[in-house]
Length: 130
Image (tube, rainbow, N blue to C red):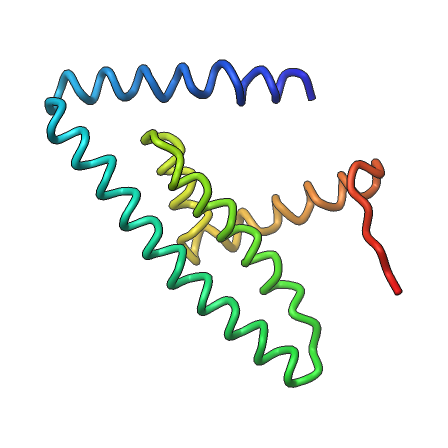
């Protein structure tokens, strides 16, 4: 856990800044700024679209008496992807897009599910049942 926190709070931002500096030197500050703004706007639009589709499918499943388990995991992946796209940086944008795009989200959904199951098994998070 300490290694993960070290990566998230020190190494990941350092990587993002390095990519920013390199990209800014290659394309210029104005284009860098426009690219950052564009990825943010497109990311929010994509997250909204995918989130609404997931919500509709989950609602349909519940109306048919089925538990929307896959759709809840899809929703969690979309939430993670949207958050990553709101962070400034190109690495986080790529990761966010991977969580948002349906073909890559299917593969990441199993990783998120395994992570959740591990956290539940360790009592890091609790699931309350009636």
